[in-house]
Image 1 (cartoon, rainbow, N blue to C red):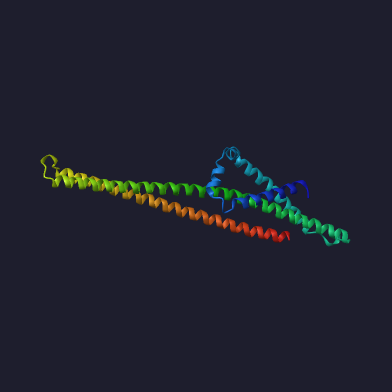
Image 2: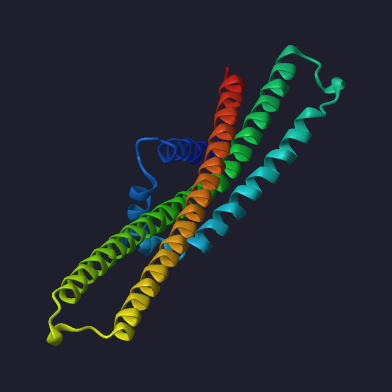
Length: 235
C-alpha cells in the first residue's frame, strides 16, 4: 500500500474511533459542549473551516483517483491474461483499487458525519441549558407568586382585624382597600402569565431537544449499518 493510501486508512481508523467516542451514551452533550468550549479546541476551531475544506479537497482527489483505478483495472482485456501469473497480478490490482475506493469513500463520508455529530451535540447541549434555565425561571416565578399570595392574605387578615377592632384611628378607606386588592390581583395575573409564557418556552425547548435526539439516533443507526457493511466487506 502506497503512502497516501496508508495515511488515508489510518485517518479512517481514527475517524471510526472518534465517531464511536462521540456516540458513547454515558458522555452527556453538556460535557462535550464544555470540551468544545475549552481553550485548546477554541484555538483549533479558529481555522476549522479551512481545515475542513482542505481535508475534503484531499479526500475528494483520492476518491476520484480510486474511481479511476477501479475503472482501469475492472476492464482488463482477456487477451492480456495469457499466463496465470498475469491473471493473478490483474486480480490483485483490481482488489487494491476496490479497497482504495472503499477506504476513500468511507473516510470522506465519516468526515461529514463527525462534523454533523459535533454540531448536533452542541445544539442538544445548548437546548438542555436553555430548558434548565427556563425551568429555574418558572420555579422562581412560582415562588414569587406564592409569596405574593401569602402577603396578600396576611395583609387582608390584618386589615380585617383592624376594621373589626372599631378604633377610629385604624379606620381604612374602602377605596384604598379596593385599590390595594386590585393591585394584588394584577400582580397575581401578571405572575400567572409569566409562568404560562415560561412553561410554553420550556415545552418548546423540550420538543426541540427531542427532535435533535431523534436526528442523533438516526445518524447513529446509519453509522452502525455502515460499520456492519465495512466489517462484512473486510471479511
